[in-house]
Length: 423
Image (cartoon, rainbow, N blue to C red):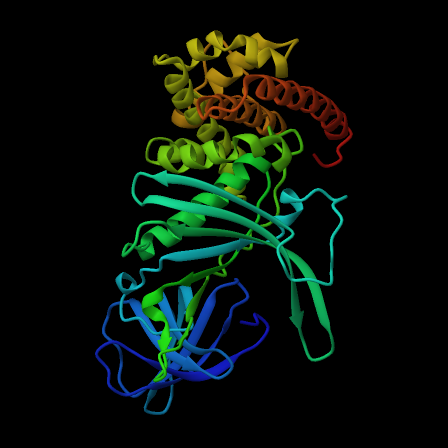
């Protein structure tokens, strides 16, 4: 689906037998938007769970979780409604998400190939066969056994003037057990958790482009007994976050982490019921790029306390936690650990309750908040990756690199900030 075009077709609304002429496109806010006219007003409910339709240039579609944007009555006897949809499914019509149970799904994250393959890798632009293919067998608690395959290949896109080749990476999940597929909820969750997994390892956002799903139940059977595969394409256009990358993050290349990849993926999915809330707090800077630095700091402090409790098997107040982890913090703040510890305690109390410590007139300024938050999140990531089984020597080496880069970057930006330039 071309995000620069508007498509014409019709939709079928629930409890309404007459198809509605409709315009479909992508809004300026990067959301699936559709508008239609009707002779009668819809009920007071603002949301429609599922809308089916057929559009020129797209074919059959299913729109999921549609919410009303506005309606107007300036069209004689007609009412114009405008809606946004969370997801667009191209290729088939479903009356409910529960009907979507593929046995195989594949998705791609935009530009993930840059992480999978180093820049000096020799590419063959004359073939579409995968030039990198890795398979990992694993099982997760809520889906049983499956295979995950990572494929890098060349793809060709066409427009009216020329064709263009580009490198893409597919992440493919296949359910091993017969007669058992992925629920629609699991399809979305598997893709979203993998996206977070990549952010966690790389310190960079790779937007989720497409999800392809297949099932033998959807195949077209011809009179002669031959079959034709039928697949659906799930698209969410709500992924165009501004690129946020903090250069001193605790990050890994695919080559560094590949030996642990299978274990990491399995533990990541199986541990998210326990750790997802803390992971989201650690990734605040990436998942919610517009958030204030005060909120970012508060989220990171909460994650730091929670991960300390899990990794050290005991719960303590923030001041005691910081005291216990002095060896880690001094890697980032070697000259002023006590000042950092006090400002963390006072700052957390001030931002939570609006109260300063009676013995201190200082809290972190806006510049210091960013670096304090990143220091705590890097250490929290270190503890979590250690629990997931990443080699201690690799973790210690990466933590040393991150701390050195952190100190140099903070010193440089502090000098820039003092000269009233940006930081």
